[in-house]
Image 1 (cartoon, rainbow, N blue to C red):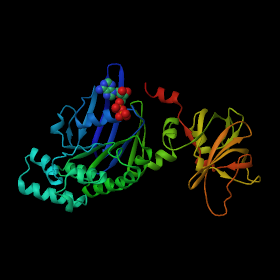
Image 2 (tube, protein in one colour; image 1 turned 90 degrees about the horizontal axis):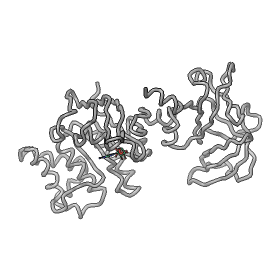
Image 3 (spheres, rainbow, N blue to C red; image 1 turned 135 degrees about the vertical axis):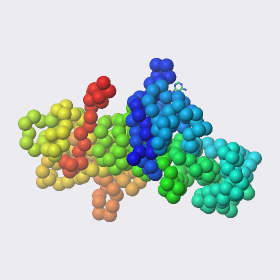
Image 4 (cartoon, helix red, strand yellow; image 1 turned 135 degrees about the horizontal axis):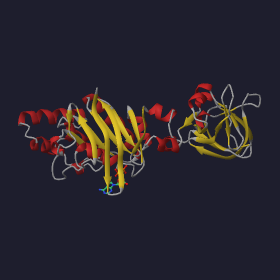
Length: 363
Ligand code: ADP
């Protein structure tokens, strides 16, 4: 049973289509990330759910209620922004109490809620401090505590971590997930950071120019991207343009360069004739010349990426691929100019929907 439902949600600003036909069901207690590049419609979607922006058309339901035309203050929705918007002249306690007073929560309830949310975010000993006396991470936790004290039906996060330094950002990811799980509140989290979405979300909604490109678990989005846009936006992929070799019983893909790639028949059966094949760099292995189906090539460039080596490889037919290899004892680091053979498991290939197919399903 969905807790948050968006049906055919649209937002246009004059000729600009900010959000187009968004359909989404978020289950109670689920943590969903809205992911996409700048301008893809994430913030507009969030603002429509919060009630700050009226949709051009479509429906928004929270729990059992249709809230599409309800003003923002009558939706019990909590918002967490990147600038914490704490009152600088108020203590931590007063910052949290402020919202409760505005909602006419009585003083006994207020005391109890302040105590419990401060314990939840681990700041019980800091309640008399002012925001300037707290670190960035602590201020973000106060902002979260202030929202949680209001017991929202739904938590909306708008890029809440983008002001924090890299290390703190990683810590706060875990902290936000822990708090959201403990409270059990349903959450929608807007980010343009694929790693943030991958590490935090139960499911990711990838947006492309106002439309949903794909919805899935982080693993589905990474391992089975549906379009080139998704495969490109999340991680790195090698792409081969070409067509299925007609009449091949075991599945053969012929690239425009002439390169032939074996693919599992079940994938071949599901793919259209002209297609793009994608393979992730870490799925490609260096193999010996005896390995059937292996492809010869030469290393053009070798780059250290910390724990991984990145190799740019020119294949015999002119195609170029990226290979990522974990640096490990007894695995040689290769140098530019070295001749190699590469292979991958056919099941690790993904067929991508072409942009044409995508535009067809718009009709
Ligand atoms: P994101 O949050 O993914 O960066 P937005 O939702 O802010 O994207 O914007 C989506 C599109 O809608 C963009 O093309 C943006 O320029 C446009 N847009 C957003 N808000 C307005 C507005 N108030 N007036 C006109 N165009 C807007």
